[in-house]
Length: 548
Ligand SMILES: *[C@@H]1O[C@H](CO)[C@@H](O)[C@H](O)[C@H]1NC(C)=O
Ligand SMILES: *[C@@H]1O[C@H](CO)[C@@H](O)[C@H](O)[C@H]1NC(C)=O
Ligand SMILES: *[C@@H]1O[C@H](CO)[C@@H](O)[C@H](O)[C@H]1NC(C)=O
Ligand SMILES: *[C@@H]1O[C@H](CO)[C@@H](O)[C@H](O)[C@H]1NC(C)=O
Ligand SMILES: *[C@@H]1O[C@H](CO)[C@@H](O)[C@H](O)[C@H]1NC(C)=O
Ligand SMILES: *[C@@H]1O[C@H](CO)[C@@H](O)[C@H](O)[C@H]1NC(C)=O
Image (cartoon, protein in one colour):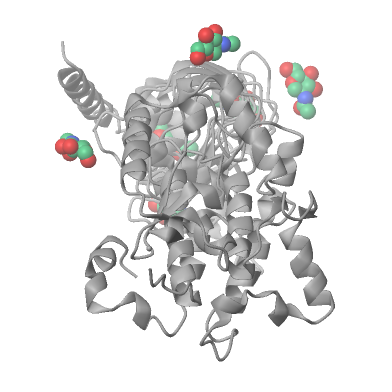
């Protein structure tokens, strides 16, 4: 039997039972409380609070319950004026079948029994709070017929067994479902109707149970969800990307056995590592440790890397480093590009934006983030339209480890290595951001970072040079003269902004650095005003490729 027909059977079964229950409704909710609910909830022990549920006590004086009439008007049990309302002493209400149970709230009431199936017969019951008691046994299937339920809190009991599928029948009215700290086990059942959105459900707290199986993916369709707690269960498998569709304010997936790569949006979300702690050691990605290793790249991503590398090599037109370092000297490249165009700020900006877009794409445009790991001017190829391409990205994924390590250690002496990489070997998106910051400083200052043979082995620390200049109030002097050509106000033309952005990228603390997407946004919002050089009619090709 297929899944669809099983679901249908389910719905049919509930419908059938609801009809059956209806035929019993000649009796009143008050009688049901005394006859069925009270004996079941109190178990073997006598509960003081429940002893008030007695036909010789007016229903207004029963503890933990509120009443409503069929027409929706509440039973006023508390005095509005000085004299008590007549209902306070009215014993006949006990037999009134138009009087319905509105709420049943007995938290911390020393209840020791189990939940009776008759709870499903309260057609107007909205809230059921029996949290912090010693109730045991399963949630009865029939609870799914209490179709008005919106707030359910059964946390802190000893309830066990499988999670009844019927609970999702309530899902369109449910606002809050809290079942924390019980002993529910097994997989979570799917809602009977596919694509249920549980449009009002804001709180789903199933933490502290023994639930197992995959992440309940259908939860990602619950559009109103604000709090999701699946912590301290036995869930396994991956955390779905679909969670990014929700506007969650609180998320706890800690202490399960989730594995694999976290969806990339968690890198920028408000949720810290504590939301994901204590899972399978393979669970990775921000805010946990970054994911690395070829085993986690999908075959598609690897193919993309190889194709990217090949096309990068084919389109070489000139090397940025040739422009930046040997402006005065004749380089082998210059011997061929007579009439080399000046690298003014507009062109450098276009190159920087091209690199930033490339990196942002690697970090977020793929199903799995790709870390470049080797950002430096040597690995940026620039064509005659100042269209930048990144090469050598992801080499560590396809090379033997020793060679990959060699590349990382070389990055150190070249001055592109983020401080945190001196301690740990593995790169992450934010270490790419650091290297990009150095590269942007290199373009702004016209100076090569790191150890330079020509400087007699002196180590050039670009961020420190900028900091010193700012302190000495000589900031404007750090800019490369060629970049400043034709610029009247470095402030208005985005030069100063780019300098600040580069310094932000080079922040020693990783979490302070912007994401590459943010860098792209900032560069796009702070363009040089004079871009005519980039928009001459002969340059339409590059316009098409990099919409500026
Ligand atoms: C709870 O019930 C047990 C007996 O079932 C009793 O000994 C105990 O005093 C009760 N506790 C409270 C706080 O009522
Ligand atoms: C109701 O209370 C009376 C005494 O107040 C008691 O004798 C009687 O057994 C109780 N009835 C039920 C159903 O608990
Ligand atoms: C409820 O109705 C029954 C008869 O159906 C009657 O015996 C009983 O006394 C009534 N109870 C109250 C509290 O009015
Ligand atoms: C007592 O409740 C009964 C049943 O709902 C109702 O018919 C009657 O009017 C009430 N009596 C008073 C004095 O409110
Ligand atoms: C559920 O949603 C999926 C994808 O959004 C769609 O393909 C499918 O037809 C929907 N099913 C129903 C029963 O609406
Ligand atoms: C966690 O999941 C892995 C598979 O991803 C499985 O091999 C392992 O046994 C699980 N551990 C526990 C404690 O369930």
